[in-house]
Image (cartoon, rainbow, N blue to C red):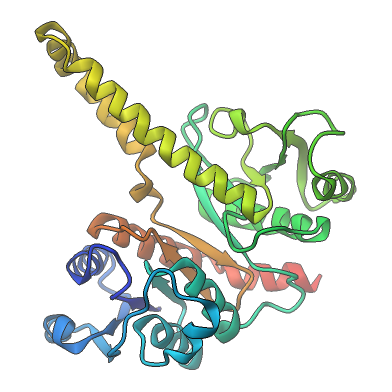
Length: 325
């Protein structure tokens, strides 16, 4: 297996991505990692045995789609093109989301039959202790009912491959659990999903139940999914801050924190975005994983781990088969 890494994308610089690549390599020394970026910053990795592809340019986070394609010497464009041209199994970047989506869709190409690729990732399920798969979390703004139905199929395959759930329970994100709730596209998708024998559709899910319900897959338009993602991350940070503030009030509260520290550490780990690693751009002809923009070594390592697991499970081949049936 060969995985291509854009080493220049993280806000935390190449020190984070280099350590992340090394962490992954320690766990999976049999996997070939191709590191793409500036030679002066990555020459030590080449000396360690990693394959280096030189790239002299780095994309900014606010880069537009058309400008991305003109920056042919950027590490992200070179990483994606190397993956496409050399038949590699996966590509990983922590760079600009918009740039990664547009370049991946153009260079890796959509799977035949896929109407629109979707960004898909796992959230923690606080009720079951497992994971709930969410898509789309930002690959597009609005989606048709037919695209939402395809997202439900993509999410089902992802949940089966990554989370090991045989028949994932699928729900549409909505402002109410009743059948008549939701956007016009959502209500139309509801009717289409009711007739699908290959999708275990269970109806609507309210945002308040996403992390505490029994759903395995939540389907939503890209705009709503991105708002859900950022709201959840913000709420987790705010809650962490409130807890820290509460325990600093007195000597007794500090003692109480020490007595319950293990439990709070477990909660922090559960809600830590780094544990998820990255989001898959589902619907293109290779595993393309977008890591968090501020990925540190652990976060980038876990993004590579997501790419490895998806490639190992044959998620692209499974989707190609499903689209062809």
